[in-house]
Image (cartoon, rainbow, N blue to C red; front, side, top):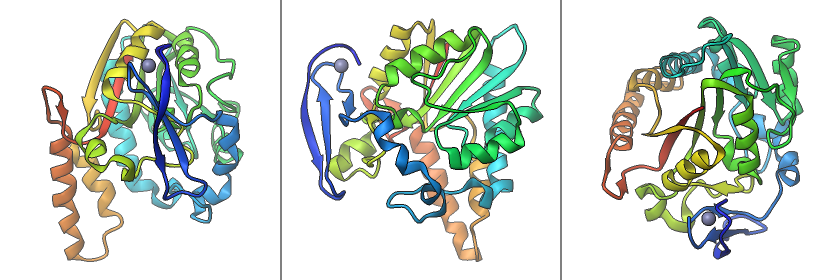
Length: 284
Ligand SMILES: [Zn+2]
C-alpha cells in the first residue's frame, strides 16, 4: 500500500487451508497475497443462505429493521457531503440493494456495483439499469459523477484496494465523499485477540488500521479525511435493528451489550481505540 517491503506476519490455522497474513514493516497494512478474482466463488448463493463455508446474512430476511440502520446512515452522510451537482449515490458491494432503497428515500439517484451475480442480479431487478456487476478495482465508472460512494465492509475483500480507491476518487464530484467501513486492526479488540480475531476470514484479503487507511485516502487525493470510531450514525437504529431477532424479554439484555460496545467504540485515547470497528470518511 505504501510501497515499502512486507514480510510474513502470522498464520491463521482455524481455516483450511490456513490463511497466510503478510504485513508491511512500515505502515503495518496486513494482507493475504491473493487477487480479488480468486475469491469470487465465495460470494455465490451459499454465502447469503448460510450454506457456504463462510457466510453473510441475506438482508432480505431482516429488511424492515435493517432499513432503520440504512436510513440513519444515509441521513448522516447527507449532512457531511458537499457536492453541488446532481445527487447520486453509489453503493459498492450493494448486495440486494437495501442501502440504495434508503438513499432513494432521501433524494439520491441510486447506483450499485456488486461482484456477486446472485445478490447483484436481484438488485438489478429492483433498480433496472442502475446496478452493475463487476469489481471496483477495474470497473469503468463515470467520472465526477457521484455525491457519495459507500464501501460498507467491502475494502477488506479486495486484493488491490489502492486501485479501487483511485477508481472511487475519480468517480466522485468535487465535495463528494467516500465512506469506508472496515475493522481497525490497531483497535484494542484486534490487538488483544491477535490471530484469533474473528475478522481473519478467507475472503478478507486486506486489513487496514485507522492510520494507514487515512494515509492511503490522502495519497489517493482526498483533501480531508475523518476517522469515526464505530459507525457514523447513532445507537438507536442499531437497537431497533437488533430487536427484530429478539424472541423473549430476556433477549433485551443484548441491548446492554450493544450499548456498551457503541460507547466503547467512541473512545479513542492517545494510541488506544477501544473497539476495532471504524468508519473513515474522505472528502474530494
Ligand atoms: Zn506499507
